[in-house]
Image 1 (spheres, one colour):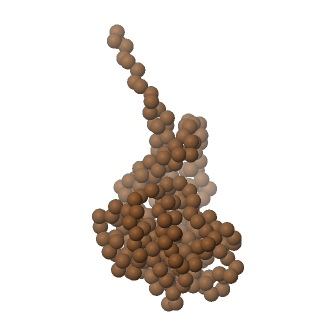
Image 2 (cartoon, one colour):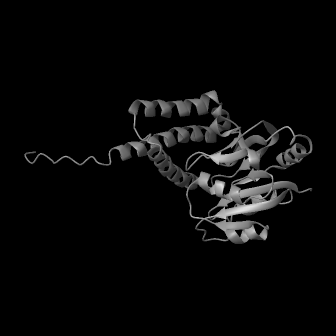
Image 3 (tube, helix red, strand yellow):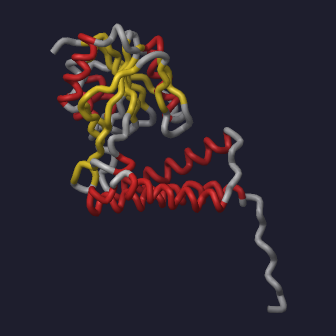
Length: 264
């Protein structure tokens, strides 16, 4: 398969389990692989280097800054940004090849659907699918922005939707999912503090919690995914409640416990 003028950029922390699957799908299509790692205690670096990647160690400062750092080291005119727990499907690989044959003169980027494997099945409804993501862009026209979590790519110019799915293996188990939720909640709080938007509202929190469930399960047909769809909708609601309660806890950080009435 012809290599394309693409720098693949990946950030990773202890991803030895996921990296081979991710890299096997694209190594024959990209010219360069840039890896940015932090605090790895497994074989993440060795695996990346075995695929010919240029690997850089950098202290963790959030998704956006890590990916911007990787972008700075890319030398190819086009950038493909993937997470270690993602895999480009064969159909999407073909679409990218076709994009470079027919469309790069007219577009500065491309986006596609991401599909997640969860509780033994592919999730095809709710908030998790199609979950469109921009991952391919001309280097001179795009950059990463956002907070510590949920970074996004901003592109100047037209972008095209490609056929095929980006396969997502985000959670090994429910326990793994819960650990990620805790980390995301911490990042959410830090973002709010940095932006000066750390005021808590009970009403807004309650509305957000109910809306997240209703949208995911009913409006976006999460119920069609069976029990996993129900769990995801409930989890989306709980995650919203959890991270805003994290904000509430922060707002009460200076409140001291009242002395008990000694006569009682």
